Image 1: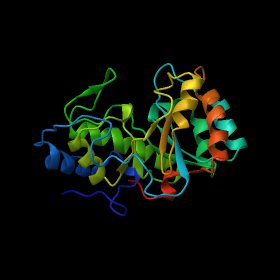
Image 2: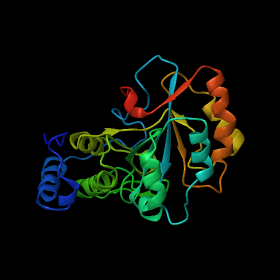
Image 3: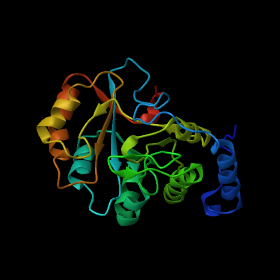
Image 4: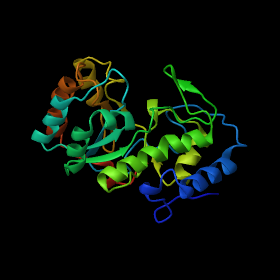
Length: 255
């Protein structure tokens, strides 16, 4: 099985050069004959919790990069003012539209930047769709979706992502094996915090207050016109009063 782990990754300056082409060909050769049977947000192997009983929670925020999204500066400013850590899964299109904000986020030690793909596609090897969004069509396209944004992030920040969340957080099991072969952990969630930024602030508060030790919350930082910031402002102080500490994904083993 092909492994693309630390020490074996091509330098981003070579992408998509010879090393990248070879990597892509190896993945295609290894996985093209496999037919997936599963299609879900909870395919076995997707990480949905921190592997601990400590009273810690991981807040994760997606920035998806669609044509009508933006930057929820109110939400980020609140996290900074209250010293709340978060893991940010950022899509390449969002980076291109918000480059200065991205650099500021990457430089802030409260946050860590992880990979949300090039085009925000579900992780498929046969074009499966989720919520009306078509997934990657084949193993090679999945490699492009993951690795080209990883290279972009590393080039801008000096740090290569360790985790990957697909667009819509849907995976098939073959795609999941490819993600792992590339050296990443596929991250889902245990708390659906804002349902793609569609929840009201009251619904967000209600969802977040179901958190347990080790929960991974998913919310969005790309829709300032929605109520995600207001909902988090309602829920996070209560979670802190309950004794929870907010941590980045990299601070704990994932389960």
